[in-house]
Length: 87
Image (tube, rainbow, N blue to C red; front, side, top):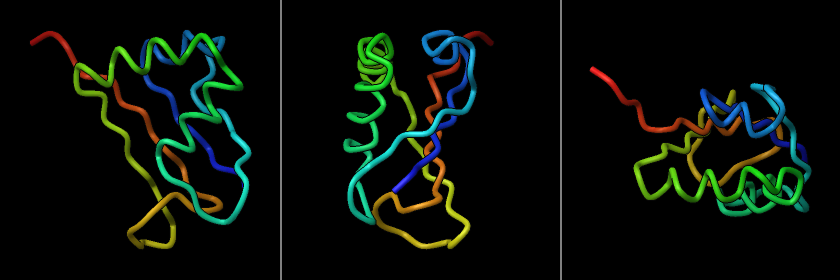
């Protein structure tokens, strides 16, 4: 299945300035961790940055047109939101 990943702020820089990338996953449902693993395989430079931001409060959201709960499914968009700074 294909899942879109939306990258915000400095995360875009780690993938050449792209704000939206796609990852391919086996099966019809996956966890956030599965999505991140596939993303890291495609963009190794992103792995260290995301893991560092997870320690600081990175938000991982799923946007689904189907409006259901559970894992990530075909056509969903996973959004990675780094913690905001400033005031």
